[in-house]
Length: 116
Image 1 (cartoon, rainbow, N blue to C red):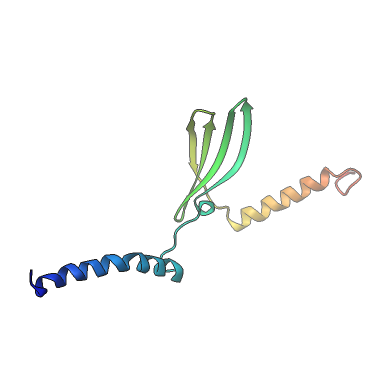
Image 2: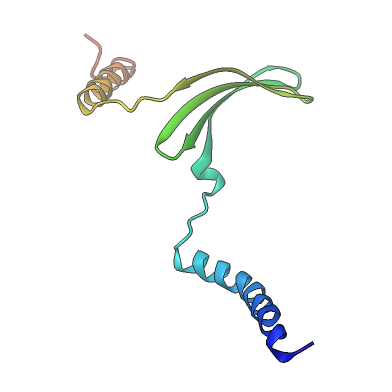
């Protein structure tokens, strides 16, 4: 074996040895962003149906798209019962919903502002 035939093998070994360092550097510098569990899915509600049985509402995000999943969970399995896209409320809709919630909560106060 001559010295000129060893150079490609040494270059390959050098590249393979530097790969983990390059990956670590890319993650630390923020060049590659890996999603965390909280960025992918959020449990919105849990309803206990029976012993070892639950209904879960989960919001799942994939990039800019959001979906809600209704899951049936037992000790043995997890099944998707329904799914629907999440639509962000418009600002006028959100303001009206906040106003409705505020007036409803004031009406429920004992001796509060909502009683006539």
